[in-house]
Length: 257
Ligand SMILES: Nc1ncnc2c1ncn2[C@@H]1O[C@H](COP(=O)(O)OP(=O)(O)OP(=O)(O)O)[C@@H](O)[C@H]1O
Image (cartoon, rainbow, N blue to C red; front, side, top):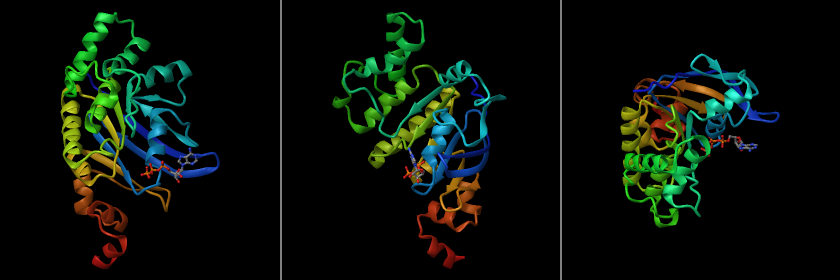
C-alpha cells in the first residue's frame, strides 16, 4: 500500500489581506491519519483548509509535505504536489451538465495520458469504491444528496491522491447517510492508505472517524487544543473545547467545573 507523506503545518498565520484569522498554528498530520479541523462557526476552519490545499498563501509560516516546503517550492512543483491532493468541497460541486462517469473521468482526461478505454476502467473502479457501480450515465440531478457526495468523492479520488481534504462532508445529509459516509471514509482510509484532513462540526463524525485533530478558537485566533477527539472529551479542561464536544453552552461548562 502507498504511504501518504506526513503533513507538517509550521507557525502558520492565515487571513485575508491585513485581517489575521488564525496565527501560530503548528501541527502534524501523520500518514494514513484522519485528522479533524474543529471549532466554532467562523473561526477559520475552511480558511485553514484552503491554505493547506495551496489555494491561499500564508501570511507567515509554511506547510510541509514530507520534508518539502510547499511555499518554498517553485510553481511547477507546487502544481505537481496539488495533483497528489483530492478535494471534496462542502457543496460537492459536480458538473451538472456532465454525467457521473464524465465527472470522474474529467481529471483523468486533463492530467493523465490514459486511453479512453483505460479511463472508463478507472471510472468504473472509483465508482465501485464508493458504492455507485452502474451510475456512470446518471446526471447529478438524478442522484440523492448522499449519492452526490459519494460521486464527488469518487471524482476527488480519480488521480489516486495521497491526501484527501474534505470541507464538511456530511453537511446537508440525513443522519443515516452521514453515518454511511463516515463508514466509507474509514474504509477508504484503511484500503487506500491515504490521509484524510476533514473540517467538521458533526459530533457523531468527530468521534466516529477522528484519529487526531486541532481545535481552533475564533476569539483568541489560535489553536486551543490538539489531540484525539475522544481523549480531548475525557481530558481537556478548556471550557470552550468541552462545550463544543459535549454540546453544552460554555457558561454551563464553567459552572460544572
Ligand atoms: N474571502 C474572504 N474574504 C475575507 N474574509 C473572509 C473570506 N472568507 C472568509 N472570511 C472570514 O474569515 C473568517 C473565517 O472564515 P471561515 O469560513 O474560514 O470559517 P469557518 O470556521 O470555516 O466557518 P463555518 O464553520 O461557519 O463554515 C470569518 O470571519 C469570515 O468572515
